Image 1 (cartoon, one colour):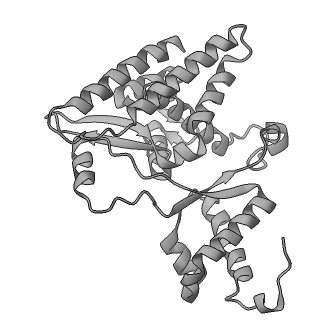
Image 2 (cartoon, rainbow, N blue to C red):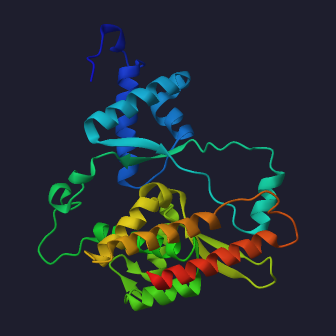
Image 3 (cartoon, rainbow, N blue to C red):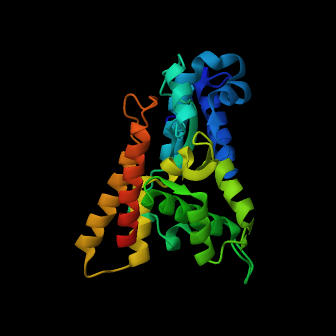
Length: 281
């Protein structure tokens, strides 16, 4: 990094403010708290809010150079139910920006190994690493949602967790407590819909889940589950096809708010195709 010049020495300088933003970003990431622009203005910039762009860019450069991470903006929450889609269509705000960020690693793949990264914290012998268990559980959950076509019914997720002996308790507590933590942290989203007259509960991948795990994370997870295979080309083909189906289910086509039910039928067909792909995997 460049050395601070004499005019950068004040508390309102870009150098000092960027250092404060780096510390704030790291503290937020430690607790999985999203980094919001209003919070940055209040807790970091104060009376220097007009310097946001310059300070943000400088802090991001420091994060990349020193910590191997970068600030990545979270995508907007998906509109899944008919009511959500109608409300979004009526809204005057068409901005795609959320002004909410999380830290994402930019470390090369060859360094993302357990022997290099090491455990999240030192543990006594025989002690369960709850942090690593949580990472494994939310990665598995995101993978199951993706493989199911981008949305999974609550009952199907419960059955899958039961097969993993995680239907009652997990290293983090009860199943419900663990799922609630995933929702709170933005890894998954719980969707309740009663537009059909009967309430249904489904789960979709949340904004943090898309950024932190995403398509590549799900694909790598499936590869690791299968290990070395003689039919690697066939596995890759099935993975790609499954991910494409999941992406197609998330496309917001024009006119989805109409009462014809066309969008619901398309989503239903995509999910049925995804179930067939999941059976193949």
